[in-house]
Image (tube, rainbow, N blue to C red; front, side):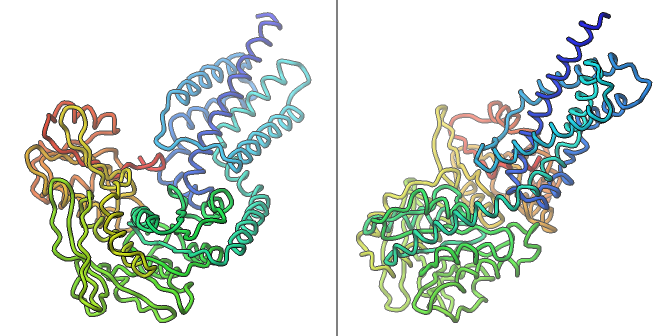
Length: 538
């Protein structure tokens, strides 16, 4: 083989190795982003997913070590590297993700930094180990690139550490700007909403009701972190807004206090305290403390609406501000101020009465929504709306027009006559049980459950998914368990609940689940999609 041919081959392999490493860094960045750019969460994901010891990674590491052996033929090693990088690049291109990478400014900085570190590693390797010939430089650089591929997780975490001071400085500047904008609007009414579940839906319902009387802004989508709220204030809050509804999410102690320190809410709703995000919170008491950071932040003349259907809300006193407790199940509790009564489900939705316990007055409401969770969320929104002086007639009109929030117990019919109950977003023990109640109440066709189960439940992960399976056995005729993460727990629960083995199907992907549905369902059947795990869970 001539020198020119060797250089051409080596250069081609070097380009393949560079492209493969770049694509792998982008994939690692996607998972880093899904883990909130937090190294501790990213490490936990690496440990549970086995991504750092995958077949591709181990194969790449083997070829890297072969290339380091002094007496290995360089041409043979480069051919191995080329074959590997080409195959891995094709695999990366073909992959499809439920939550793809969003190239924010922060993500761009991380990708550029990780690429820069890789280039520095290549430059250092060639400077130290190459003998100065073109072939040697290309071989050494390509080997270094393969090493960067094998260590891409470490490169991403190192990039995160190096950029920490930069991100903190940028975030402080944005935070100060948002705080200044809020200070310039002293008459703005800020309402905080938090809870283990139900906060996004309640936010939408409250926004719809208050918009009947006020210029109202709510944090969009799942912008429920401090930076999400900062972005909403800087990009969307206008001087004419009268009410700002802020959804507040949390995965560790202090998260909600941080948001409150920025927006200074005057009113609040705490929708639920339950076993959500226990992997980070560890205990339900920590969940309770974090959710009540919102109530603790309110002024003495403020007000918090509390959902007393949850034990960890009902047993937590609030002394610093006024509180109004509401309930659907615990409607006769001693401290209840508002409750839902005379609930009736119809083919077109639900009707119920809101009872004000202080004066015995009733507000009759009808809605297109179904499910006890939706009634509870509407009730919390009504408590705040009445506190702010929205007339009952406007509340009634708004509730009649409330649309289903996408992927949160929304019901629709699709071509072919199937009824789809879409509860695919962020399943939890309480919400999933309510969704099963809705499915179980359906008649006229086969009832089918499609689910990967629930996540981030800490040490209760297996137990709660097993219990979910038991409940599902009584509510459906066919259960399709997707993925391997909760397969054993849900399947055990289904069997405990008495579901026949032939009615339990286990598949690896949602595409496989769709194939089961195509074969097993027909017009008039009902399908419940309960949860849809992100790419961080398999």
